[in-house]
Length: 168
Image (cartoon, rainbow, N blue to C red; front, side, top):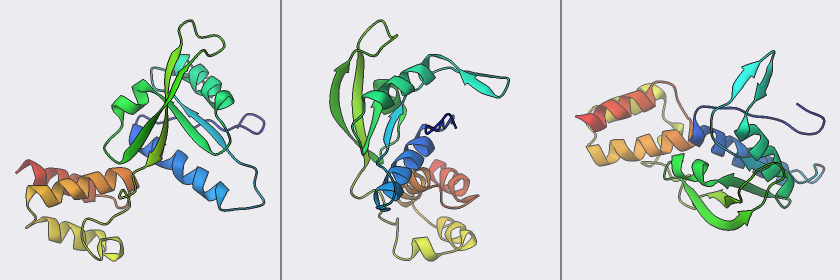
């Protein structure tokens, strides 16, 4: 936390995007909270003395400052590294303070169908139930489970089981 700002760091692009979008939605659903502005960049950063340093942090900070209320903006590198569960719209090229070249910027949202379960009852099934179902699933169904799990980070062990089934 830095004043009223928060920094989230992750090596998992999809997890970071989902966290940002879900945080944005939670804040929008609470009328007592002011609207959020979120900027996300990707690249190498280092942790030193409990603090993070690097170009992507500076870009994310500048993107956040340039974002309108209720928007999540990201760089092209983030869009390119993200999985299929997100909808992207161009937000133009922006000149960010301290960044030499203009940055290609995109607004991100969850796809409309991104919350759709791989099968009816999936969300209420236990991890053991899902792994059992995956034992006989075809590659297409296993792929839907992988995509859903990556977007929503539901259960430990399920993503690995789905990846293994998809590979067979």
